[in-house]
Length: 213
Image (cartoon, rainbow, N blue to C red; front, side, top):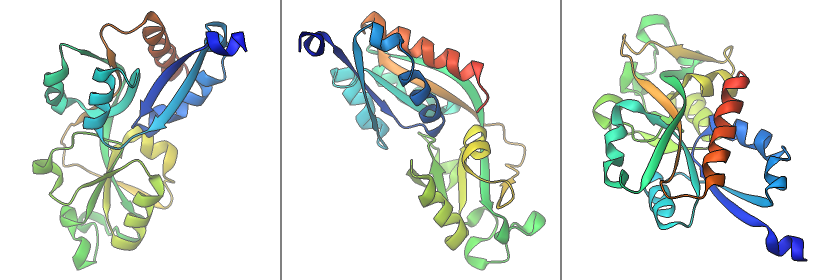
């Protein structure tokens, strides 16, 4: 009973499918048990809520995949929050191979070229001027598969997410017309956080660079 009372909790929210691959590996390590920490993990879609929760102290760490060109959207929190880049990636566009016919992309008039319905898988702060007004953000991979298979949608995601979660035989990666759009898998936490927070983020960074995902 005294042992349970002495344990502290680390509250983590993740909006990144790529980082969700790494978290269980860290959870299985004995490091946190030795530190007498229990970890509570939740998945969140709304990044604005995530920022608020971390700045208010109800969450300790947030994990996101973010378009590096749009990091300025977090300027309002720069005095309170630290954003650490854990690994860099790149944006890709993916569609169901059945709709793909070379440079024309698809024969379906509802999903023609980049006028197709579009969704975003785990990439926060997408720019509507680039991606279109009908962009839907979700952390649910099955939702995006359904949109690609039944609506001819184009899904924007990180290259790592594509390689791990979507079979190359069934889906095709589209050219973004030489646009270089860098992404970053990142951790967000309060600048005045307990040392265990930085230690946990460092564990995640090391794991991501040790393994191939």
